[in-house]
Structure formats: structure tokens, C-alpha cells
Amino acid sequence: MSEITTRPLVLLVEDYDDTREMYREYLEFSGFSVLTARNGIEAIELATNAHPDVVLMDLSLPIMDGWEATRRLRSSPATAALKIIALSAYPRALDGPSRQEPGCDAFIAKPCLPTDLVEKLSAFLNLDPATANVRRSQGPQL
Image 1: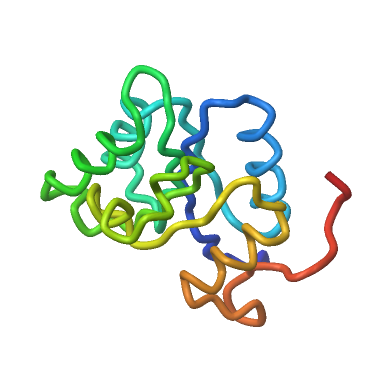
Image 2: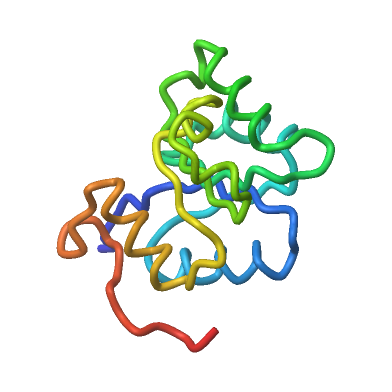
């Protein structure tokens, strides 16, 4: 008999292919399910349809930036309660009022090592590695 486990679903929004794939692979290795988007429009569509546990939103994106995508997610009843973490190197995001402007729940500065991302994401979601199916290990060398 196989054991059914629930893996937290993360929507990773990142326009740089290498960064997006590196984070996706490490998050999946660490026990998360991951959907990816390359811009704000894709992010809104996926968030609306998949209802992820958390959105990791880059703020500087093509087509529609993460600021606007977050505002739109917050203004829709279907996605208003989503947990959204800004994941960006954008300096303005570090400012207190600016970080809250689009409605982000937290901020993680890039560059961010994949191990640090998993640690911060797990803490944000209050995941206990013993019960949440999120592995705490050294993992693959990325």
C-alpha cells in the first residue's frame, strides 16, 4: 500500500530561466510541489487555477511585473488570501512601506541560496520537517 503525502504547492514566478529552474529543482528535491511562471500574467492564471500554498513572486518581470500581479491577485476574491512572498533583488522592495504596497506577506532578498530559500519558505509556512514532508538535508550541489 502506498503512502499518500501532501506536498506544499509553491508557485515560483521568475523570468530568468536558470534561476527559475535552479529554485524549482531544489524546492522539489526538498519536498515541495512547484509550478512555475515567467511573468505576472502567467502567475495570475496559475494562481487562480491551482490555488498554491504560497507564491514566490519576483518583482521585476516582463509583460506584467510582480508588483502589478500581486495587486491583481489581492484584488480578486478568488486569490486575495494567497500567501505571497516577494523574491527579488529590487532595492525598493527592501523599504518597509514599499514592500507592503502591493500586498506581499514577506520578502526574501536575491541572490538567495536554494538551501536558504527552503529554510525561509518552510519557516514562513510553519512546516515541521518531521510532519510536513519537507526534507532538511544538504541536497544536491547546485
